[in-house]
Amino acid sequence: QQQVKQSPQSLIVQKGGISIINCAYENTAFDYFPWYQQFPGKGPALLIAIRPDVSEKKEGRFTISFNKSAKQFSLHIMDSQPGDSATYFCAASPHAYSGAGSYQLTFGKGTKLSVIP
Amino acid sequence: DSGVTQTPKHLITATGQRVTLRCSPRSGDLSVYWYQQSLDQGLQFLIQYYNGEERAKGNILERFSAQQFPDLHSELNLSSLELGDSALYFCASSVDLILSGNTIYFGEGSWLTVV
Image (cartoon, rainbow over the protein chains, first blue to last red):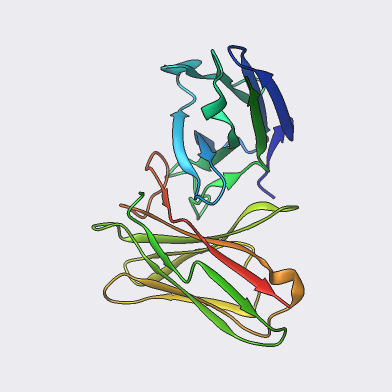
């Protein structure tokens, strides 16, 4: 069964600190790795995404690091702010032509981030 | 606002009943996905439709069914409801059938409580 394992379940970070959330996968057919951010009462929204041909992608304070050989990827939030307090989900989907048959996102179980002032 | 509209936002119903959740995808999006979110299982993919046809099935129970209509809106039907079906049900949409690399946009969800 396709799985994405995410850790930690919850994370408390001081304002200005670095938040790090990790994910691991097993299916080598995965080739698209997005991170979603979900605020209470809202649906998940795409934050940043990466493909395996690069090891890092940065957008503002958010960085994805990708380790293809270890089948791991992580989200780093630099200079964390109280407004970043939300639940973060990593996800993965297979290559369009992998023969996987379905291309829906498989999500990790989420990390609840609390940034305290 | 993602552009994906879900109704109702909240629903309370009794065990054994049937409910229908409705979703209008973003304008121009042909693919619709249904996800179930619960505290212990996270976001679970249920089913995907593309331009009216079922394209992928995930962990969807036989008591559940869905369809996508010619105007591209979708409905998720949940029947013989059990307490364990209480969850947040999300609809999402994307432009294409092939998800890889395409942004998937989520609605704000329908809270279902079964009592």
